[in-house]
Image 1 (cartoon, rainbow, N blue to C red):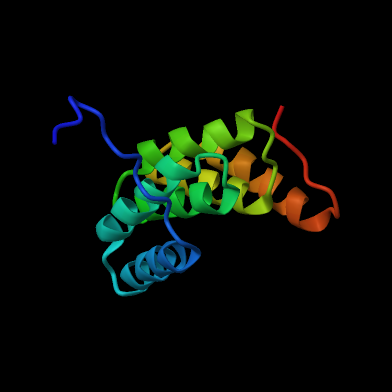
Image 2: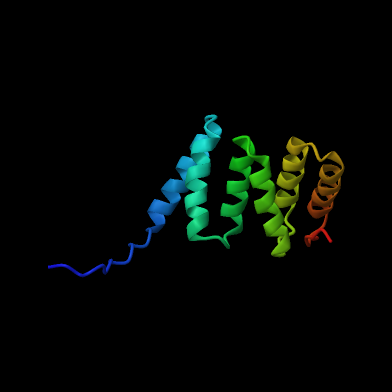
Length: 125
């Protein structure tokens, strides 16, 4: 019997499946396959765009896979959303270096150092 275009909702991922995706992505990164890690992190990011760790992991994988512009775009969106974590500043600085924007990279590195030194985190103005 046809449902005339009705589709059952996609089943939610179980915690074990999400953990497996994270582990696989990490394994790909550690074994020099960052493009494969990007696919997994991008899928997780599509499901949980507000998850800071997933976003940072996707940015890292993009950077490692030779896509610093895409990494930078994601990192800038994190800063715009209020993230002032040291890791975001560090990844942003590394992305800027790869793009050749060294003055901005140095500035981002200063924010990274300041964020590491302070108990509370600062956002770039």
